[in-house]
Image (cartoon, rainbow, N blue to C red; front, side):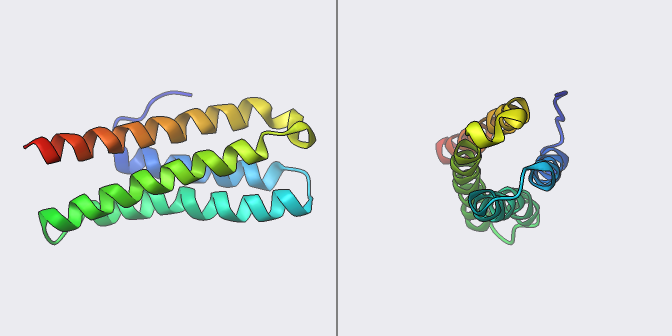
Length: 118
C-alpha cells in the first residue's frame, strides 16, 4: 500500500478501502454488525478531518482532530474483531487496514500533541 501524504485524501481512501473489504466479506451476523460499525468509524475519520480543515476556531480544529483520533482507535477495534478464522481469506487486507488505522491514530495524536505544545 503506497502512502498518500495529503491527509484528507488519505483518510478518504482509507474509508473507501474499508468499504471495499466489507463488500467482500462472507455474510454472517458478526460480519454484518461489525461491518456497519467499521464503515461508520472509518468514514467518521475522513469526515471529521474535512471538518477540521474547515475549522471555525483553533478550539474547533483541536476538537475535530481528537474525534479523528478516537474514531481511528475505534476502527482498529472493529477491524481486529473482523480478523478471525471465519474471515481467514481476508487476513492480509484486514491487517493492512488495521495498520493504516493505527498509523492514522498516531498521526492525529502527533497533531494534537504538537498543537498543545505550541
